Image (cartoon, rainbow, N blue to C red; front, side, top):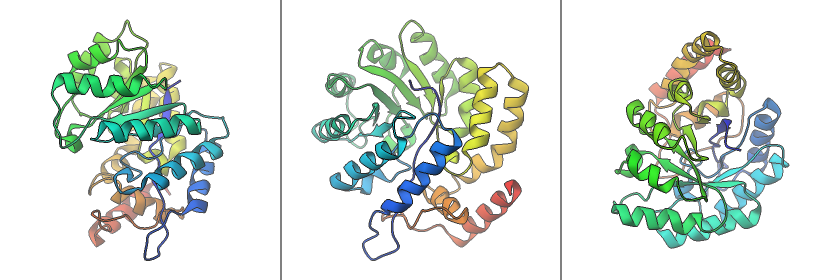
Length: 291
């Protein structure tokens, strides 16, 4: 189920005092992505500013995504938290709304020990909805080692991992250790999609696909067919875009890029602030290459 290009959706906000959820804009963005042929959708992840969404907003974004997906593509809802009780609440809400799976970031700030991590993920996996672990040490301050992932992969409710450690040796070890399990290893970085899939990964949860889903899909399709020359060509064509998406903290650049492309974006919420003038200029230069 969790194979292909899954855009990590931005959450568009209105340019009003409260920076309220832009419901119409969210629907429009999702419709564009579904019509473009993406393989799935990921609302309420880091790119969707989940940390600053209220519970009601979080639930609304997931519900809208499911409505617009119309059953055509799976929806993997972000439901992570550094509070296990809160993660359970968010996961239950996503399950009740009809999500196909949940993306659960490893608990940040707390720095749980190994047994705590296992109990945290087991508590969520026991809720009878597929769980995708999200390992992103740059945001959480704690790396999930391959032997831990191998142990977690044995739980039937844990379906895979979004790997954003940037460590290709680690990712190779995870794939090696989980080859006998029904376990998806998904790239969490656009620029790592090609090497991860060459090792046996199943796809990417993509930031860049918010604005350029078609070439991301073309790169994935080329790799699935074994046409690595075409995949490499697309990778290098998109490489400047991949880099530009992280010249400031995600999702600051992608939200501005979405806006520059004429789609719904709006402001980011504090403690994130708007893109600097130099970032906006860089984004314009990069996007002009693809126009």
